[in-house]
Structures are given as structure tokens and as C-alpha cells.
Image 1: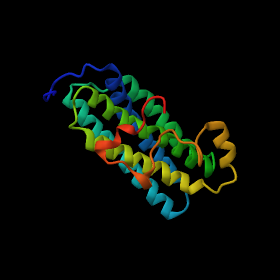
Image 2: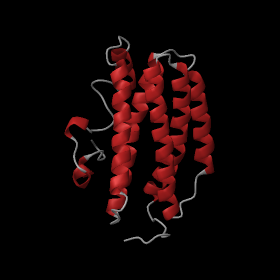
Image 3: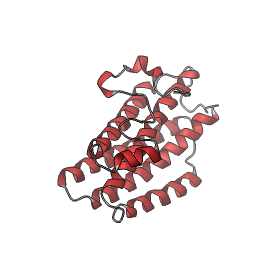
Image 4: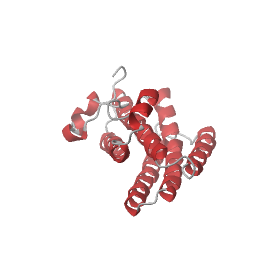
Amino acid sequence: MNQPGVTLNHKELVKLLKMAYSAERAAAFAYIGHAGAVKHPEEKTAIRQIELDEWNHRAEVLTIMAKYHIPVSKYYEVRFYVIGKIISASCYVIGWFMPFYFAGRLESGNVCEYFRMKQFFNSMGITEHDELLYEMGIKEKEHEIYFLDQIKNNKMLPFFERWFMWGKVKSFNNINLDEKYPVEKSEVYCKKGD
């Protein structure tokens, strides 16, 4: 069992933590633009809450990184800062559907980041982050479902799903919120090859 301050000897996990930390800020920036661009107050409120969730995830990931002396990647910080700002600005010009669609698609992939982190930690005998990583993965799934629910009856969805491989039929994770596995059985989620 790793003690506080011990360095992780797992390149893939370290990279995933660094990327997730920086990508959460990009997502938060994107949701600032998305919330600003929508007209309905309920949509603004929901998207702002999702933005706050992303800032919270960023803080939680940083806490884990600090425990294992993992430095923040300057490269990822700059790269995802620019991506987030571009997406944020684009929400004002690409219409209503696309920000919802691509937010849902992004969240669908983000779900597995946290379950893979849990699997990597578990492969080294570290279980202390299981609950947190599980909760963050489930929260990302809730975000995915929110965005899909907003567009599920839109006539453009079948076309986008065919081209971008996400929608009512396709997802980038195998989680069903109506039949969730508990933390201790969640190793079935997001296994490579699924």
C-alpha cells in the first residue's frame, strides 16, 4: 500500500491524471460559453451546475496528484486552456443542437477516465480512491444523460450519431444508471475491449 508522498510507478495512470486535471478546466470553460449561449433559464442552471461539477473534479484530481507528487503538465494546461476557450466561444455561433450534442459525446468518453484510474490504482493494490473515482465517473455519466435527454428527439441526432458514433444507440461507456453496480463491483465498467 502506498504511503502519502510515494511516487506512482504507472505511466498510463500518471498521464491520465494529468490529462484529466487539465481537461476538466477545458470542459468548465466550454460550459461557461454553453450556459451563456442558451436562452432557457432551466438549461442555463443545469449547465452551470455541470460546470461547477467539472471544477470540483479538477480539484479532486489535483488532490490525488499531490499525494503522489505528480506535477501539473504545462503542456496539457495550455493545450486544454485553448481548446476550452475555443469551444466556449463557438457555443455562441454554432446553434443550439451542436453544443448539446458534443458536450454529451465528450462526457460519454470522460466517464471511463475515472473508472480506468480506479482500475489502474487497484492493479497496484491501492483502493483508497475507489469511492471518489467511482462518484466522479457516475457524475460524468449523469452529465452525458442530461445532454442526450435535451436532444434525443432532435431530427439531427441520427445523422450526427452515424458520423460521430454517439447518441441514443451508441455510447463510449457501458454504464446504465438505472442498474448501477456498487463501487465494489464496478470493475466491470469501462474495461478495455468493451
